[in-house]
Length: 532
Image 1: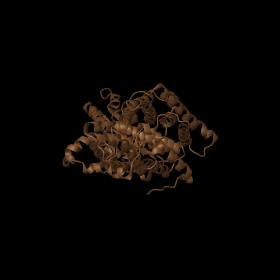
Image 2 (image 1 turned 90 degrees about the vertical axis):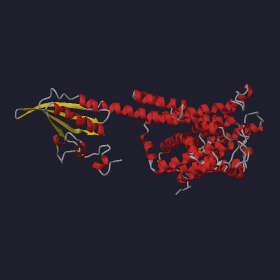
Image 3 (image 1 turned 135 degrees about the vertical axis):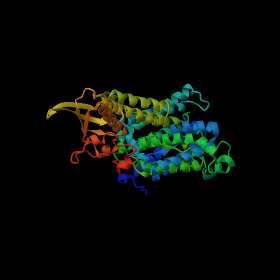
Image 4 (image 1 turned 120 degrees about the vertical axis):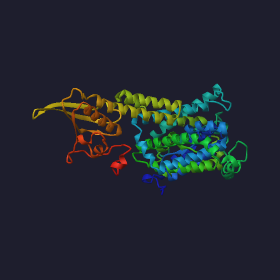
C-alpha cells in the first residue's frame, strides 16, 4: 500500500528535509490555530495527524499536508458563531466528502484547470504566504513591535535568507534551510539577543494524555474528550444543517488546494501523483483529526516547496516531519520555543520568492488578453477571498472564453452547382457545432433565397451537444416551411437517431459517415459508452 523507501535511496535527503519542514510547521500551525480561534495545540496536533496519514497513504510522496490558513479563515466564523465542537464535527464531515470525491474518482477533474488558472493559483498562494508573515511583526496585543525589536527581527530575517541562498554554493551536504534555522538560533542564544521567539508566541508543549484526552481546560485542546462533553441533542439534523455549508466550503478549498499543489509538485519532480488516492487519504486524515478534536488540514504549498527543494521526494520526508513535530510537542518543546521567529519568517520569505512564478510576467506577453486577465484575476481573488472562489471563477471564465472562441470558428463554405438543369447549393460546414455556435450556424443560412435544393455537408464539422442537434432540427423546419428540398450529409449515426424532424432528409453513407458520440440526455439510449 505504501513504500517508505525514498526515490533513488536518497535516505539522507528525506530525513534532513523532513526535519526542516518539521521546524517550519511549528509557527504556521500555531498561527493558523489562532486564526481559527482555537488552542495552539489544536493546530499542532492537526499538523501531526494530517501530515502523518497523508504522507503514509497519500497519492503524492513528498507533498506536505497540515493545518492550513485557507481553511482556518473559514473555520474562524464557525467557531465564533457556534463553538469548537461544531468545528470538529465539520472537519469529520469534510473528511467524509473528500473520501467520497476520491472513491468517485472526481480527483481527475483537476486536469481541467487551465494553465493561466494554475499560474494565478501559484502566485496568489505566494502572496498569501507573504502577507501571513506580517502578523509575526506584531506582539500578542496586535500592536507593531518596537523599533529595536523590529530591527532585530529584520537582521535575523536577512541573515537567515543569506544563509539559505549562499550555503548551497559551498556545500549541499545539509539542507540550507535547516542549517540557517539552526545557525541563527544558536547565534541568538550565544549572544543573548533579545529576539522574539516561538515561545513568546505560545507554548507548544503537550503530553500523550493531552493528545488523546485533552488538557481538561476550558477553551483548551480537548482531544477525544469533546465527544463525552457533547449534549444529547448535538447529533441531530439541526447540527447537520449548521455544519453542512461550512463542511462543503472546507471540502472544496482543501481538495482544490491539495490537488493543485500536487500538480505543481508533479511538474517540479517530473513525476505524476494519484489525485483520487490523495483525496481518500486526505479525507481519512481529516476524519481522524476531527475525531481527535483538531482543526484538520490540507496540502501546504510553502512547506511542500521547502521539502522538495531540500531534496525530500519520498514518503519518509513527510513521515519524519509529522513524527518530528510530535516529538517536539511531547519532549522537545523547550528547545523549539528558543527558535527566533525571524528565522522562520526568513525561511518563509525565501519560500515566497521560490514559489512566485516570476516568469509569468514574460509569459503574459505571449498570452492572449483573455488568458492574461484570467491569470491576474485568479491571483487577486485568491488573495482577497479564498482559493475555491478564485479557481472556480477562473475555470468558469476560461470555459466561457473557450466556448466564445470556438463559437466564432464555425464557417460555412457555399458552392452552387448545376445537375441536370437543377441548381443545387451545397454548404460545407467547418468547425464545432455546439451551444455557443448554434445561433451563428443558423444565421449563415438563407432558406428564403436559396435554390430549391440545398445540401449541407458535415464532413469537416462535429456536433457536440443537444443544442447542435436542435439547431439542425430547427434549420430543417425553416427549409420545409420555405418548401425547399434539404439534404444532410456525413452526420454520425448518433446524430441521425436524435434528429426528430430531419430523418427523411439525411443522406446515409456508411463508408464515409463519421462515428462519434453526442453528449445529450438521450445518449444512453443511442450508445453504450462514450470516450472519456
